[in-house]
Image: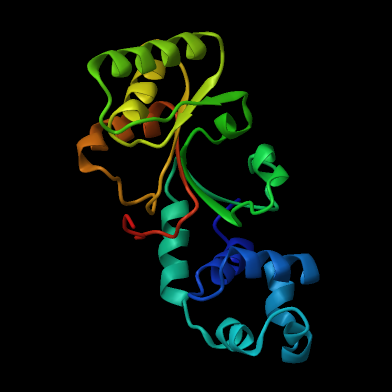
Length: 209
């Protein structure tokens, strides 16, 4: 989605502290697009969410955070996908709680390709790390996108295995996409962002929890 008014409304909805994914989905199910949510009357909103959440929805000023996110999405190779976008991963739509937004750096088309997740210990044995890299390389050569979490150990080995054979890999982060963790994997993250994709459902600046 282009960084414009429509995306700004999605960001406004998702960047309100205290309005989580479940509440966002309730509002979208009841009213449709975010612009319709914000145009709804307090009475209509209270039929879907509580008084406190209605106040947060109507009174929170998150314009600065919206502007930062729009600037980030305007950078070539970076985008923010919404639930309404055709490029949104279709497999996520089948789960009960799909993220309302996804921040993506890299090749968006990989998110709808056949994929295999490989995750594991952050402190594997040397043999375990070699095996993870070997399995990832083999599956990547077979045409699967290797998905992992960029953590130390098995996750990093899986990403490296895919990259070592010119395969495709996607890293899902537990931080904002502008905060790579752990720092030891920063170079690997840059390579994944250039050749594969990095994805986060969390707002920019979100630290490791």
